[in-house]
Length: 340
Length: 293
Image (cartoon, rainbow over all chains, first blue to last red; front, side):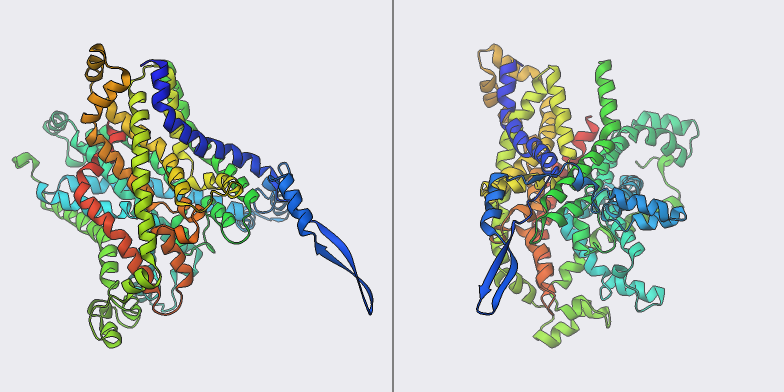
């Protein structure tokens, strides 16, 4: 394809991606280095019949003028990154000096918003991803050995948890695990504790979010593995069987090696998706016990006071996290491409 | 599959049936339960006293005089004006799907046909963009949108969703176009077509299966999005998902939680139908990236 034709064909999507993905990333980086202007304060002397009083007031005009002149705000360098809501260098240092042991240090770290968020995000990502792969594989093998007639309905119902919006899917589960809902009251009954509330306990909230994550994403792994199982070489399987491989050995030595490339694909997609976990935290109203990086940005941006600089700094740190997660894949692609 | 060697021992058979039954309950039961419960009053939906109430609707009978009630739906659609959010969702979905497919087919076609190195790097860049959590981009949009008065409009939201959707659309259509033989458009160009004419008259007629599948996923992204729509749409322009989220904050008073339940069921219903009609395309779309490499 000629250069000019290629350029014209990709122009619309490149412009869209430049304007709304590439520039925003740059803008986020720039913005994270600035903080909003403080309000201009003036001291006014009010003289009344009972003498003069000095009072301070906000000079609205001057503030507006200052904001107009420098819309980005005041240059702050890396201060936003280092403050208590982000990397919290000072607090970490104090905690390090004061803490007696690792457990103590960890507990203090989890009180800092950023470390609390990254702690949950990483736990979620690295617990959910392997579980999704395992469950997806088991379901795929089971569906694959079901009668052809019922596979259609099986796939239909399997797709539901994934297709439904995360916010809605997690709400549906949230209503069921509510202390008055069916799962919540069953758990209370089983535990013999009528005051058991999943929402009130940090470990249970984490488990609940992870269960939701697996429930939501297992169908994706299932579908990919199921499609992979259709292409397993029948002759190889039969040869293995003739050589006396048991059912499990057939899976272990023929099916799993065949599906391995798919596992890389699923793992990559799942790492990317789980790292941005966010809607379930909103739905489960779980922010007191578990926050994620995306949730922290959402929280900064929402509400009356939009803390743009703080959100921008968290965004940059999140992007760095994504880059670290993706780097093995990118390095491998680079090498593969070099070999070609 | 009925040869003797492949017959399963009873234990394996039972295990498989057990796994499937358990998974079906896990996957389908929450939806059926919520659908059933959405026609009850709150006392039955959250039936602390006796879970059988949720099935029989005892309190619903007491409060409304019938086993089923449409109060939740009435409250959500009429009182809380959920219909407005539904209209907005329809508009957003139609435009996002059309625009991203138009951009995506052009770009995906070029990427599939170009043999130069930069096409590969273009795809890698798209993959990196795909990995960016949308909410990080939103914090980049807001100052600009506020400054230029673009914030809150449906049009802004549509173009943002199109852009966020592009990396995925490009990857998917690129792999579909790779499967259309090159000879097809090249012979058209030998016969004197320009590249665009070849695309218009030869490729467009045969590309629909791939485009429909990609369109389904664009639709899902636009329909399901929360991060972007919640942050850049004003209250009256909200689509369904952020609207439901806003219900949660305001409906703590008794009975109103059923509005949210009804809204959730109303939002899920179109997805049900979509999966039912397009199951084959969805499955092929999900696996396209993986199996074809």
